[in-house]
Image (cartoon, rainbow, N blue to C red; front, side):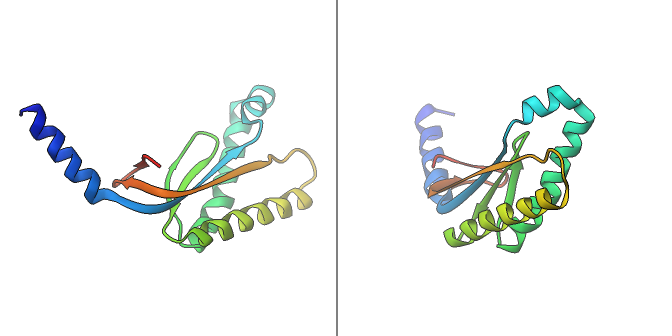
Amino acid sequence: MHKDNIVAGLSRHIRKSTKPLTILLTDIEGSTEYFDERGDIEGRLMLDQHNRLVFPVITRFRGKIIKTTGDGVMASFRVPTNAVKAAIGIQQLLAQQRNRNPGPFPHVRIAIHTGKAIVEERTCMGM
């Protein structure tokens, strides 16, 4: 296929796939150190606990899990305020867990970004 045809097809795909979107990202603070100090099994259990707590909150606020990012999650929301509500809900749930379970419990950073993105089946990009 000629380069111009490829570029034209890709340009049509991008125009058709570009939509307003809000992205929520979580990141577990100190996860590398946690794995180093406690080992792979404990580290993996910590990641599983994060996902078991975070995924339902994202879903409750109409978010879609795009992917896990090693020590966090990337989720999309059509409504920006739902992403904010999910972030608050996640932090509240994690605080409750820390209060119930003495000992080290990871803290989670959350970032939210709103803008136009190229939305594809399993990812989004270009915000």
